[in-house]
Amino acid sequence: MMNEFVRDHMTQNVITLGPENTLNEVRQILLEKHIHHIPIVGGENGRKLVGMVTSWDLFKLGKSVEEYGQMKIKEVMTTKVAVLDPDQHLGAVADVLTRHLFHAVPIVNDEHELLGIITSTDIVRYAHTKEYPENLEKFIQENM
Image 1 (cartoon, rainbow, N blue to C red):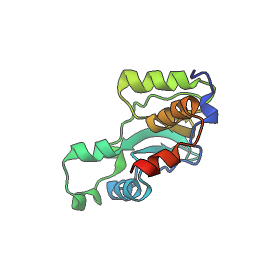
Image 2 (image 1 turned 60 degrees about the vertical axis):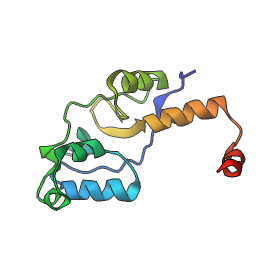
Image 3 (image 1 turned 60 degrees about the horizontal axis):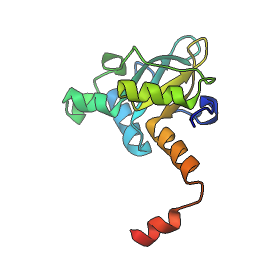
Image 4 (image 1 turned 90 degrees about the vertical axis):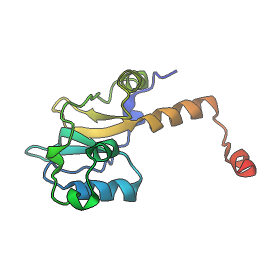
């Protein structure tokens, strides 16, 4: 069922930040965009994946919002990030997500440059539309 390529389902226009950005900037983006993961990029061309910061990373710090302005992303980001390439199948994403309890996997090329991201929500959406190709929105509205 999940034999389609990651490249056909990943989000390509990913919101990113750099290691020198502050946690306040992370918090603002997470809240405004309703997302939970921000890939951190750097390197010569500013596209190399160097880490990841999540809403969970902020939560587990136990810091006040006021303290976020003085804290750099590089102080809290995860640097050992599981990644996949765009030619992997969605099943590989599902395997990584379920084995490691992650909720997002960055997609990179051979130079470790960020190409996109795929999340657990993307996998659920894919599975749902395969199982229920009809638009069920009318049923949701009737029962809400």
